[in-house]
Image 1 (spheres, rainbow, N blue to C red):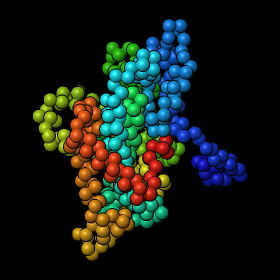
Image 2: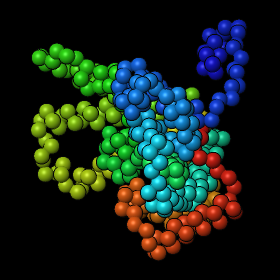
Image 3: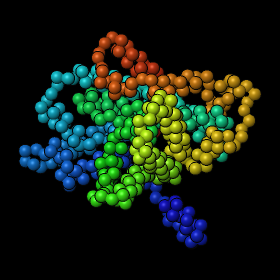
Length: 416
């Protein structure tokens, strides 16, 4: 409506439609996705065996439980009925309690890790990211170090905030004997954009694949592919489908130009990567020694991570002016004179209010994301013991103490 009124003003039409300020229910997009999947599967009679009782009718109370199960309701993961209904049936109908204490221990373990990610790591990066974006959104300028520090801060804030929520949701689910699906699989280890989307927000990608990409045709758009023309056309339609899915994913995140640009950039990157893969396949270059070398993998990671780091700017910035100002600062397009004591972190990152601890947090974030197994991998290898109990107690204590002395920072995905 804002854009419509803006175009009407530019065309000198003498009217404007008032913008209604609607209060939407919390988490409306997440439970809407779950119900869309439920309704489509019921209509097409796909994956509904676990929904049917002896009478071959769907139980409305089971449906209500599926929709209202609270741990993942607010910000995901987006669960599917075929992975939840059997667990509800096993837990409540067969009254299985043999793993009660094991589930409680595992739940506390994964909840504590997610709690620590959110409160201690993500919220620490949030204060630097918010300070930097506030400057550029108000028309100010940051020096090159402040600009890169701002983008890195938001890149890691978003990851630890969202993955922390999902860990906490899995922990809460385990308290009730329910195992929620994996939603993150070390996405910042990805070597290309396609791998990133297989690792980041996995349940959203799964939904978009099953209920958008495949119905559009996926990578099998045409039945008759006995000529080069049909083969080329099929590849073009596959690129179209990849772009549309990424573009609509951007729109889902918010009604703003920044989200649209973010979706367009990721859609374009998905198409470029697919074309690159087709070129390698066409000329049979996959087996070249350089493409299998560690140097090539490092270069792929650097390219992928920096693409993600830059595109997150449009995801975060509240206006396009702020995003462009930050990009100008990152690449030296706008010159900002560095302080005389440029070797001191507080002077170098003055607009962010960062001190020497910023470097410690940044290094810790890179190490955690790139060198360690993720929390779900650790949960799969969980074995109770005194050392683990001390570690979890430490995470809980530090998180609670941090929560008590720092301002409240909401989960980022509460916005979506």
